[in-house]
Amino acid sequence: LPTALMKPLSGSGARGLMIETMTHFGADSFAGRLACIVQGSTETTFYTVAVYYGAVAIRNTRYTVAGGLIADLAGVIAAIFIAYQFFG
Image (tube, rainbow, N blue to C red; front, top):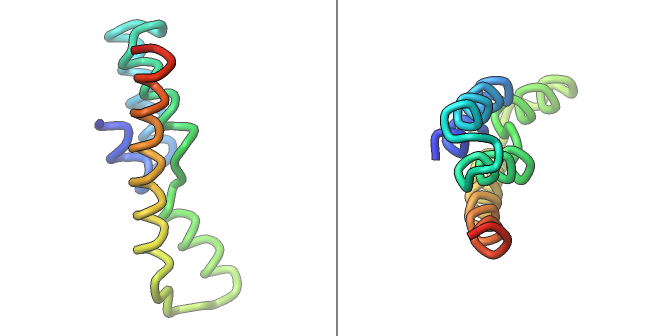
């Protein structure tokens, strides 16, 4: 869960939390595998919006952030489902 909460904000922070999870629980544990799947199935939403909208000088993001966060939530739910299907 900490990796899933950190991923929309910071990719490197989420990677650090994933490595910490793998160090604490082991790389082959359910928590370690779930953290890896979450890392791969979600996006750093705020970074992406800031970089790409900033590059073309768009100031009004409208529904982009909300749509990105909904997509991240769908990615986390799918990651949990897939982890339980394959490793649970």
